[in-house]
Image (cartoon, rainbow, N blue to C red; front, side):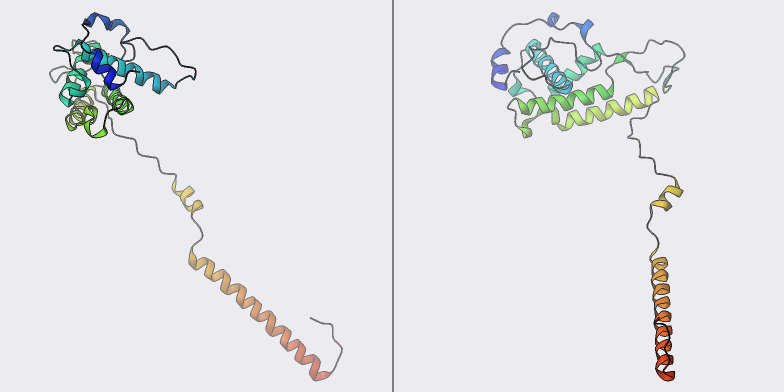
Length: 227
């Protein structure tokens, strides 16, 4: 993976947009560029995806007119990149005039445009944000963490949620049934106190009976079995 200084020197090269093949681009932006040779240790799927996304963004900067260096990249350029990726999208986003607007499972096709799904864009920005800092970028200068980018992702989420009739809210954890909750709860303090009091009372009665028995033996000077 190129470092920031190496990428800055390489952006002056003249490369056409034909190098990015639309037929190999998926909703997760995984097929736009070829992966680098595998290292001795097999990287995780996340690391491979992050490297491909980073290379795709670097290719976009080189094909930018005029060519753009990574050090001059801002949140506005990241937004341009996200809009550029919409042409490779696979997710149908219905317009407000579409009869299937807000329908999660349309019964028939419609001419509404295809876009990148919000979930794919959100994951992509997360990987690029991490890759930027791993390649020498400063966290405070990270264009992928810019406020404009966060607002854009929020707008895309709300728009697609309404257009597709799906919810992107996190699912709340289901609470166990009331019977299981009661079984898991410890016994109440009053119940424990009653048990302790009963044990003390029984012990007191036993001590009193033993004392009466001893007094009876001493008074009548008879041999009785020991209690």
